[in-house]
Image 1 (cartoon, rainbow, N blue to C red):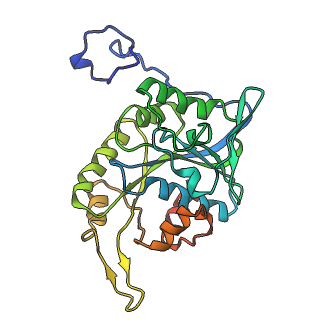
Image 2: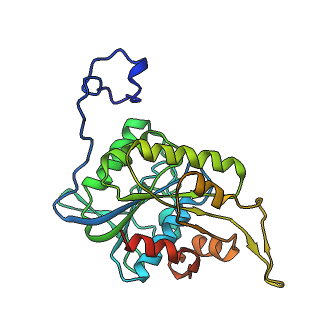
Image 3: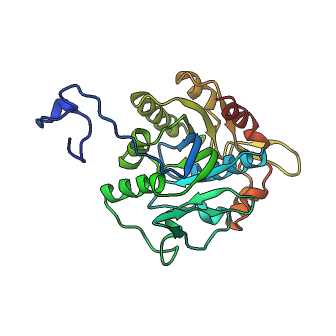
Length: 276
C-alpha cells in the first residue's frame, strides 16, 4: 500500500493488501525502557479552540492526583506545549534514545520545539516527515514509567491524526471544542473519524464556554450560547466539561506556570480517566 493511501479503495486501482482484505498492522513499538499504561489523544476538528491548553491542564491535574504523566506533542508544525510549562531547554539523548524534558512537577514532555535551534523557527515539512517524527517520539523516547500519556494532536483529520490513531495504542480521545455552532459540525467529523478507527470518544471539553463577571458573578457567553449538550447527545457522548474564558488561564500559560492553575471544571474528566 502506498504511504499516500487515503483508504478509499473505490477510487484506487492499486492492488494491495487492503484491497485483498488483509488487515494491516500500523502499530509502532515502544522501546524497551517505556512502560506506558494509558494513552489519551486530545483532538480538535479545527485549530484555535484550545487543544494544547486542555492537554496542559489535564496533564497537570492528573499529576496533582499522584499519577506519572507524560505529554507527546504531536502537533509538529505548531508546538506550543513547552511554553505553557516554561520549558525551553533542548532535549538530550542517551544511547541514541531521546530523554524527555521534565516540568516543575515532574511531567515528562517531548516536543519538536525542544529539538529546534531556535524555538521560533518554522517547521516546513511534508506529511511523510511529520508522520515519521510522531512515530519516533513514541518509539525512540525513553519514557520510563507512565500512568497517563496525553497526545496533543494537530487539528483536523489529516496525516498526523490518522497516524496516531493507527500507530499508537490509544485508550480513547477527548475532543476539544468551542461554543460556535460551526464547531459543532466539525466535532461530529472528529467523532466519525474516531468511530472509523475504532477508537473510543471519552468526552468533549468546551473551551471559552463563558466569561464570569468579577463584580456580579454573572456568566456571559461571549462566543455565543453553548451547544455542548446537544452535540454530545447527537454523538452519544455522556461525559463533557466546560472551561471558562478566564484571563488568568491565558496569563499562566504565557508565563509557563500552567501547573499552578486550579481546574475544578475538569475533575469529572479526571475521574473518568482514572476509571478506564
